[in-house]
Structures are given as structure tokens and as C-alpha cells.
Length: 240
Image (cartoon, rainbow, N blue to C red):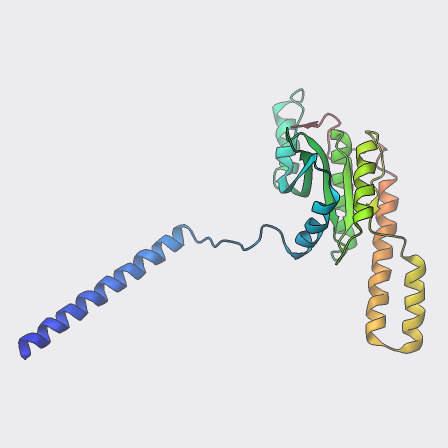
């Protein structure tokens, strides 16, 4: 009995040592490659827009998402190496939400930017100005859509048609699915003031912020055609 007990004890010890070693090896691998698969490539807002965009495009187009700007654009080789690197660094860490390309050749046709008005006004406007100047310089039509829970297929088709016909160098990029909100904001504010409803007041504040963003973006867009030393975008940016 003693012998059997010792054999069992040794066996359990060996199993314990094996399990421990395996756990150590797994932990070491996790330290080297601590990566976990994402369930979706796009976030919830992007997936919502994607479902509508698929229905709006023609068979000539293919939708690519989360494309690096550096895969869409390249910096003019006529610039010095220092300048090229400087301008490349401005686009290297950035990506665009969606790109429409020719289904047969992958020729770049247009870029889609989702307009997120939940961020601060300054950040929103700076990003929009940079993208407007960047793709205007490269001659790539840019479509901008405000994030929403649903979209009009007809509006999406019209936006794509407008982008196809847009003349290179257009200074203002329209924001689709974003009608003027001033009148509605005033009505909501008045209603919230009389009703005392906290939900109405929150909606009114959101509409007021949307209106401010719309005004800022519109004002800045009008200045896009004017030269600026601070723009940070060379006039000779090319499509990659």
C-alpha cells in the first residue's frame, strides 16, 4: 500500500509540474504576442453606414474600409527627401473610413469621411480642414456624412453622383445627411424651456452643438481655396 501511495504521489507531482510548466510557457507566449482578435473590423457606427453604402453603390464600385492614407496618397518626388518625409509623417498614422474603388482595377474613385460631431469643435474642424485640403490637392472627391442611426439610400446615391461629377479643386466639401439645424434647434430650445423636460433640454443642447459645428465647418470650408502656410499639405500631393 505504501508503494502504491508513493507511486500515486509521484504521478500527481509529475502532472502538477507539467501543468505548471505549460502555464508558464503560455504566459511567456502571451507576453511576446498579447493580441486578441477583434470581432468586427468596423465599429458600430461604421457598420451601420456600411450596410447602407453597400445598397447605394453601383456594381462598378468596391468598398474598402479603414484604408491608410499612405496607401491612397504619395508625396511628390520633386520635393527634397527631408520635405517628403515631413509631409509623409502627416499622413502615415492616419486612415480614412471608406474608399470606393473601381471593382475591376482598384483605381481610387472617392473617399468617404464619417462626420463625428460628438467630439470637440476644435478637433472636428481641424480634422475636416486637413482632409479637405489633402484630398483637394490630390484631386480625389471627398464625401462627408454625419453619423446617424439610419441613412437615406437616395441621399447616398446623390452624394456619389455629385462626387463623380465634381470638378477637381472644389473648395467646399458638402456634409450629407446633415440639413440645417438652426431653426429646429431654436424650436427645441423653446420647447425645452417651457416644458422643463430634461430629455428635451439634452436634445436641444445636442442640436445647438450640431449647429455650432455646422457653422464652424462651413466657415472654415470657405477658406480652403486660400493659400495657407499652416495647412501642412503640399500642392503636389499625388494619388499613390
